Length: 281
Ligand code: NAP
Image (cartoon, rainbow, N blue to C red; front, side, top):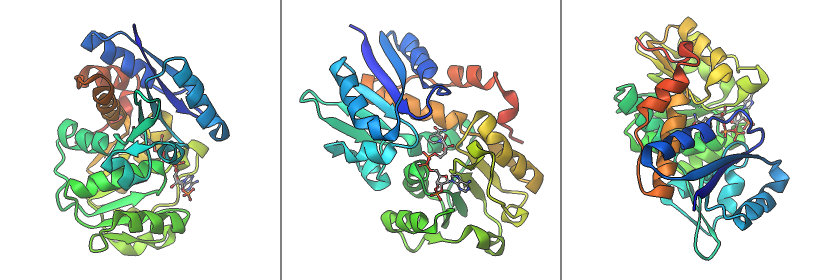
């Protein structure tokens, strides 16, 4: 019988996850069905229960309900607990859900293995404090970055993320308006969804120098404003979130099916649709 999986989000029609998981299934010789389910935040728990009743055994959760997914899990992995956010759900035999978060390992794997970046001691700026930022921050710290500065439109959420990370020697919070005074960063990570509304926060050019790398967790049209800013500011390298998307999906696939798929082929296939989105020197 084919396994039933899905990604839940709102909106979700744009999601590339069904295509990525179909490719992984073909590669691994595993019969699976992977749906995209559009659900308003208020209807998430009921939609997940209906999905389980149809035989759904695992799910991804995308914005904006990763914290709600965390809340309804009876058990969560250490990395999901540190993030307070779940992007991967696994249904147990007793019908309860176990949560995991593969966003952070997906980003680190993309940056270190696909793009060959050494993250150690990198002075890092994280823009945003939503579900994606919470997922990637612990993984970046574990990968050995230096100082981590978090700036978010709603500063209380940045404070909450910094508190949850529990690493006051390395993690600091700054207001978006004060970034011009913070000097150059080696790594600037955009984990906001600002560009979806077409409005990137105003970022000073002084944040980057000739050795800086800019990373947008978004991909496709949503990544264009930040990556254009990064190029104009003189970043050495800019990377969009397509590789992270593929790597977090591969890690979810491994959790569900016990096999980690090869990711280069599907990354190249999706990247060819929009080759301007990933640049490297
Ligand atoms: P989220 O939980 O809704 O958080 C959104 C974040 O963006 C918050 O920090 C929010 O600030 C900030 N923001 C929104 N509009 C803004 C604006 N106009 N100006 C400044 N800040 C603004 O969403 P998420 O799940 O973290 O996702 C964030 C982005 O990462 C999305 O574009 C998503 O597609 C991408 N993502 C990519 C991957 C991947 O695999 N490549 C995985 C996960 C997420 P406030 O706290 O002030 O509201």
